[in-house]
Image (cartoon, rainbow, N blue to C red; front, side, top):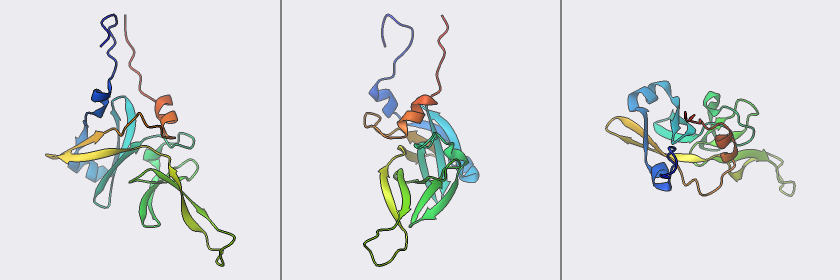
Amino acid sequence: MDLHSSVKTADKKETDAPVCVGKEEDIKQSQRITASVHDREVVIFYYKGKFYAMDRRCYHAGGPLHLGEIEDINGQPCIICPWHKYKITLATGEGLYQAIIPTEASATPKWRSKGIKQRTHKVTVDNGSVYVTLSDLSVSCDSDYYADKHKKTVQVLK
């Protein structure tokens, strides 16, 4: 904390701390919730027996991922952004697209990865409560732009 200011600045240790986002049974029943974790808006999904967490806004144009549908694509559960239908793996945050390789005999499109585009976060369950720990924010990710743009700000009254 800066002694000359009444605003507490977050240090790395604080953003590493897990935050309780809800009760396990409630999230299992609703299958998705949104939460603020250290001022970062995240969406937590429960899909086929597993919990996943990622930034709430899509890396492409800031679409609301909590409103998207989940589909299994190429053996991986993916959230489909409701705005532009971008496909993002729940486990790793990879952006997926279909492409053909003209030099191959078959012109059948295959799923390819754009790399990690959406920041994912660690989810743990302890004693019936679900916790989210933010991933390493010092490593840049495409979804950071919209996460910062839509960050909940706390107004300081003087």
